[in-house]
Amino acid sequence: MIQDPNTYKLLTPGPLTASLTVREEMLVDRCTWDSDYKEMTQEIRAGLLELAHVSAKDYTAVLMQGSGTFGVESVLSSVPGADDTVLVLVNGAYTERMCLMLERHKIACERLDFPWDRIPDAETVAVYLKAHPEVTIVSMVHNETTTGLLNDIASVAKVVKAAGKTFIVDAMSSFGAVDIDVGALGIDFIISSANKCIQGVPGFSFIIARRSALEASRGHARTLSLDLYDQWKTMEKDGGKWRYTSPTHVVAAFHRAMQELKAEGGIAARGARYARCNKKMRDGMKALGFEAYISEEHQGPIITTFFYPQNAKFTFASMYDYLKSHGYVIYPGKLTERDTFRLGNIGEIYEEDVDRVLELFAQYLKEVENA
Ligand SMILES: *Cc1c(COP(=O)(O)O)cnc(C)c1O
Image (cartoon, rainbow, N blue to C red; front, side, top):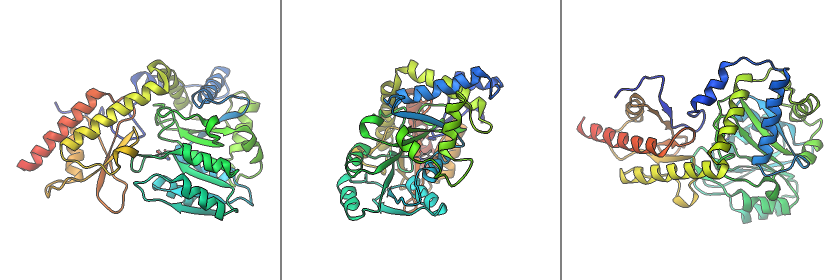
């Protein structure tokens, strides 16, 4: 069957295939200062704290317009003061991007590089921090969507907190599917967005912040629109009112998506579904001869990077077109040194989908062989 080109499923890690009911929430136009709408924002903020296992006494949630990158930049440009130095633990494109942001804002920053198929090692971080007392803030990514690698934030958190530093985590593509005890780990700022594991649609990011750390950042922001402290103060003062126009349709869809996460069984159930699909995909692709970039030990549950097959007739474009014409859209790779492509499995993707996708890859390979 040839698929309607507008109804394919996304094997991309955001935007992702959202449920019909999440998308239906967007059929209503809502007023930004209406109390029902503001209540929706407040429920989202409270729900996020619950997912992070933190209390409203110690932590708060701030929603920020824009995609995930805007949330990361909001934190990195609002938190460090004039005397702070940020250490970025680089092992993928998203930590490279953090460095670019800090440079753009002329914030003192240092980087500690790790191979992109390896997790940042806590011992190395501890040694670095001891030798570099000027560092006051450490920033890293949890699930590196560039490669599919799941970093170990717990071991790093331990050494960062032992050294008394502020800890920032980009948990964009893990929050909601990988359980993170934000309070126990001592994370000060954790960032994710509407269109990742909570399965909403793109349009805003969110930041869960330790209240004391957020309070201490007052007056540090280098931009107006991404001022995290100001955004928070407005939401607090006005019971869920956003500064400037908020993406009302996206907020309503996200509100619904949070209910659907709970209905699925919460983080544990969603994480288990992702992990099952991811393993099935990895194993099935391996059987077809596709080699994964990340070792099984460090493979995260939401996306896998595969090397191109050793087949002279293979092209990414022909594979992409074949899959798209049969209802699935895949993702190009993001490595510079070797040709890769990526298969995500977040969103409304189930084991039946993985079976179907594996069948399509097998058929595609056969067609390439016979071409
Ligand atoms: C998706 C993602 C981002 C943000 O990307 P946007 O395209 O701005 O939404 C940042 N970090 C990680 C790890 C991500 O997966």
